[in-house]
Image 1 (cartoon, rainbow, N blue to C red):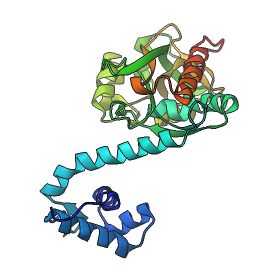
Image 2 (image 1 turned 180 degrees about the vertical axis):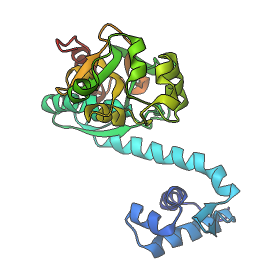
Image 3 (image 1 turned 60 degrees about the vertical axis):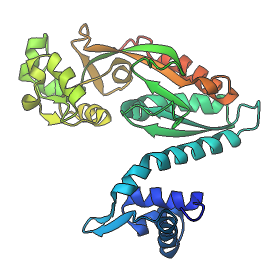
Length: 300
């Protein structure tokens, strides 16, 4: 390696790797196409290696590029974490907090909680990441995560905030036409909404009984918010978090004594962040809000 490698060149490399084109990388970085091309050329010259080859699908990373992907992502995450830390005045409840939540929580559950957080701490800025895959808290990809499984890593600090039951819900309109199931056996005569290809969800649905076999479902989707929305639209009966379903005026709980599962909810952060004022404030608000969220509702 004949010359030092700049961080800008590494950013360009990661952008091309993810966008698979110079034009896409340029838009993402806010630079010209020529600048993006120049940064990749400079990086290749410094490494003495070709990083991308052209194909019908755009720029294809070489074996050398794939080997460099992990360190480049780690650098990007470290840079983002540095910026979030530097943006907050020491000791003040202010600055950026990046929060990772499951998709359903991000759409149907956490927005009112973030309003409470905003009212209490207006100087905190939230970045919200929605994914059912757990974010890497050890690499500090995010600052706080809401998880349904207790983390086992010693470097993580977790606070159990709730145990949320899952139940069956359908719209008033659907139940008026199709009737209300009186027993689990009655579900075989109804339109059911469930998973498509997600292995964990398919295994869960299979455990609920033969009515939830994939081939018998009226609608299949791996998106939990989409399942909830489909039930709300009258397409059939879906499994949903009981507090969310109970708060939806157009939905009614089916077989109210039956609980499909109970989801533990954990608020998690890295031990190095637990005493940072804005992190502590976010965790305190979310923990209190999830306690309220899980409280029994008269309509459930």
